[in-house]
Length: 69
Image (cartoon, rainbow, N blue to C red; front, side, top):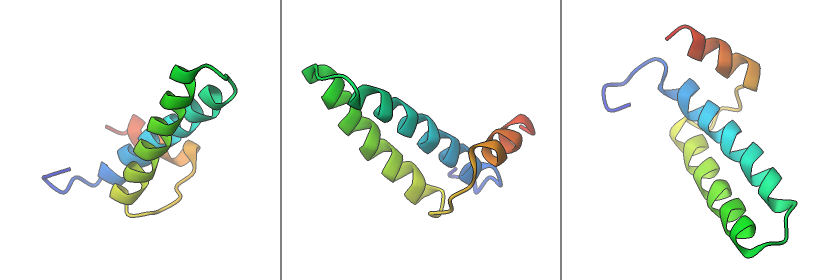
């Protein structure tokens, strides 16, 4: 990312998608550590989306881009 890679946005978008999925799963569980994990995942997802430029690339597009690495 520091070098301005063309793939930085795709990588950040993929990270956000993974964090969203993790947060969704953790939210389903009432245990404290699961709720804390869900909150951490949401914060990470927001930051990853910010770093990706805020684009809402689809999961499929992000995966395709990552396969090109």
